[in-house]
Image (cartoon, rainbow, N blue to C red; front, side, top):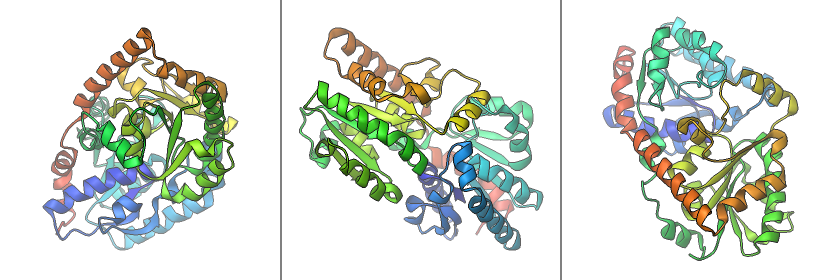
Length: 380
């Protein structure tokens, strides 16, 4: 298994748990993070080695990433596994899967690359690389079928993990937040480049928010690999006393908060499943942004907006992601008037429907879909 970042690590861990329920003696190894390792996964490299987004950012780590893939490919071709599962990280996994499949190793890709949103040319590589694709959104198998790609909708694992009615009071008690305290969750991302680009903007927005609403408090869940860097940068902020940096605990932060300021990515879907208003932000190297914009096929970047088919929450991207704009969009969600209340209620209703659509027994459906491949490869 190869899981290339924090969200993929969580998805992979849930799949591995389901596989082990059917094959207790199954051994798993490859690239993974703490969630996989907690299940006895043998991590030859940690997930954060692949947690890079953006063309320019990838170039800075290109030699190391290519070296990891070369060594991994050689090892797997020398000692063929019963099955290879690439979890997300399509730029790393698809080329590797194509080589392994050509050598007769069954391959599965978990989380269909979003060819419906951008880079549609990848569909041919998916067809060559994957024996089966596990899709987390219901419309994806029908889009892949005309290209001869076997795919199964398995629901989104997070929709099964996150309760339909989050325990706000319990989460606040866990975090030591008073029930009446207005709270904003800051989720600037799980990659170093995201922290470099977004955290300064988020901290500057905090200053503006505190000037308008002095009672506001903030929680910032940090992935362990970046916790030290984040704590150092938050400590340098004049409003550090109002910001609680957490080790992980992103779900507690989302359950407890009133609104989320969040980097575009899986965390936006998590915020939606927690039924929380949010402001989606993203910023990257200008060249990476220019190249990314050229390949986008939809007007939305955030998953909640893509899945709802409209801008249900604001997106502030690149030059639009100024501290002032981030603060104003956050304050709009916190407003205490009839229009703001109605806006929040409509959003919760949309997110309730989305949660119901994505909620499936993902592990069981995934195991059922890939069992023939695993058994073909010689499962224990």
